[in-house]
Amino acid sequence: MKGIVLTAALLMTIVWAASAQHIKVVSFSEIEKNFRVQSDSIYVINFWATWCGPCVKELPYFDQLNAVHSNEPLRVILLSLDFPSKLKSTVMPFVKKKDIQSEVHVLNEKNMDAFIKRVSETWSGAIPATLIVNAKTGKYQFYEAELTYEQLESYYQQIKP
Image (tube, rainbow, N blue to C red; front, side, top):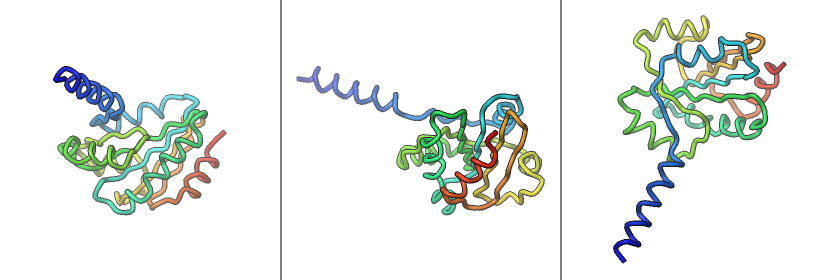
């Protein structure tokens, strides 16, 4: 009987670990190098935080965009501005609780002013903010606002080749 309970617990742990999303702490340069290289992908990068109400409200729209266009060269990246030290205690449980399916990373930048200007000269640093980049054409759009799904879909369609 003990063996059955132990085996069941082990299987549940394996299933949970397999379904858990891998979230890394990254610099903006690590993300940027992907869309600076010509590829067929369109990158939708959302800057958000677990403590930002408007950010949390729009997160499902990014998952929806990802799901609707799953057969297209689209890469949705949710880049959390929570402190890297909050990865395990806050960000990972939040992502699991909200069942976020898109790629999630936590930003680790020492010089926020320099990072913000690399994203967009017009960005004040407020969140939510979204950068959409067509890596093939080099075109990009930046939005410093909470987006609806309809807006996000429209902006995605505008930047597609």
